[in-house]
Length: 220
Ligand SMILES: NC(=O)c1ccc[n+]([C@@H]2O[C@H](COP(=O)([O-])OP(=O)(O)OC[C@H]3O[C@@H](n4cnc5c(N)ncnc54)[C@H](OP(=O)(O)O)[C@@H]3O)[C@@H](O)[C@H]2O)c1
Image (cartoon, rainbow, N blue to C red):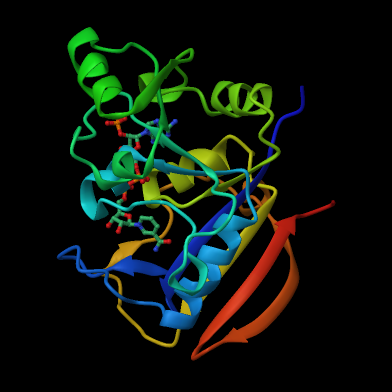
């Protein structure tokens, strides 16, 4: 069993914001970038997000390049410590979803299972949330070779802190939001620059009006 390769997808303004302070976020990046994200989803074995993104955006999480469903769909995955995801979430309408939790409430678990979730219990990591390495190991055990993380700042920070990111696909729109906007990555609590996670640039291309930058873990 091998651990899947992890891609972190980020879609931001030039100054690395994912939304205004009010939460308004649709749309910062262009239709061309969003189309490319659908192609990236189709190229991964799973698409993983956090309960925060499901609550805020209610994404379907399927791959729809060109607006048409891809022939092979990635497995859809939500990390949700408190099983706060609504049973009415749109992603359940598209078929089974893996929902990772550490200490599931039986009633919430039953409601989500009824909606189409497979509730997977893994050991707790930081802050009592599902341990990311345990989640990735479980996905690897299911034969999933690659995972694209499309999450908000909290899960993006967690996965970076866990040193689990192999590649970053960053879509950056030519727009400035300012420091009152929401940052793409929550605090990492770094004390020295030597401790900052580093990545090597692999490619930079235009994606409509946006920039699409690809990075891989430094030293690979
Ligand atoms: N621009 C982009 O690329 C992009 C992509 C996706 C989302 N977004 C935006 O991000 C915002 C939502 O951000 P967010 O930070 O609240 O959402 P998030 O990062 O998607 O989800 C965070 C939540 O996931 C749960 N979680 C479970 N296990 C976790 C773990 N091991 N590590 C971290 N979190 C874990 C936690 O909730 P519990 O403690 O309740 O489990 C946590 O609060 C929305 O405005 C959305 O539009 C932007």
